[in-house]
Length: 418
Image (cartoon, rainbow, N blue to C red; front, side, top):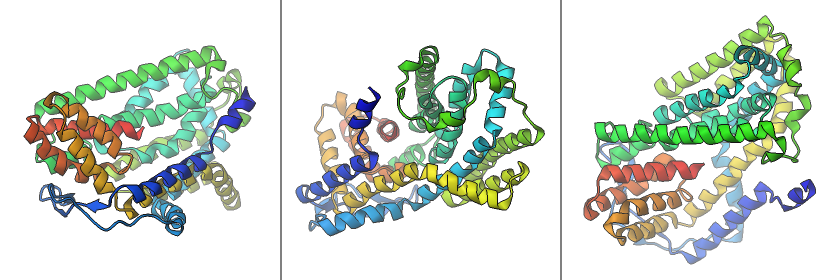
């Protein structure tokens, strides 16, 4: 059965290359076009001017440009790629040194049989970060740590990844005051971000979605813990298990003073990270540098010398490079669509489709369209400045609230990200 799985799994790079090829073919079929753009006085961003769409000379992607688009995608995603490498090195150190395992033992002694509480507690914390200040990619580096914690507690990799990713992604999708998505959309649409009844609706939606994903994750975790063979990844290679210890062994592990300080540093890093994003406008360069500083400081604290830290950096990079490079490969898709000049054409066609729907279905149509557009414009704020100048006036024409158009954008952008 395992052998069958191995044979049927399509390599992620091959899958993304196929999608890029489809995108390139579309540039030969879909007419190129563009909207005029102007600065929006509410947000200071360049936004689409409704009613200005016009066809332009096609620029279909040829063989040479297709191949170079792969490289261009890697260059365009370099900030995220190297952030993942830098940040993951810090988590790798905590795991390699046994600090995470010892912390798990201390946590198990504290919570006893209620170790499943880590799921709602941390998912809620990550979701709050996503719904308020737009935390998302910054949490990717924490996934390895929670995978190790989850597997130590008897769950699987899916549970560990879900605690971080599903938590933060749900908060980001059901944003209440996220300035990068719903904030930009509201500004472009000319509606207040914190209108009381709309804000209450967004908060209720956030709580409902979060409760749903926590319940689902906990149900899956309980099933896997009772019957490990029911894990989605059962039978697949698990490099993480090589260094895992039995639960009883972990319960008896000492949690040294240096390890305690290291874990306090882990908590401090998250606090500093949150402060930097909210108040100082930090982005990948500053965040990656923060992880690097904590990697060196924690390594020295735990007794590693400079050469050992250098070797750890290389060892961690080997394990991280696959996931990091996937980001660059995926970015090549948007490079192809942009170079082919068909993104505005797709938005224009989908906008016309929504306008042709009955009034009762317009809001749902906007939601579906925003989900589809997110395949072509993965940036949340980028999608807002392209689509909201079209969807907001359309809402006026068909007699629905502009706030409804903003909600359709927010859910469409956020949930299709997952």
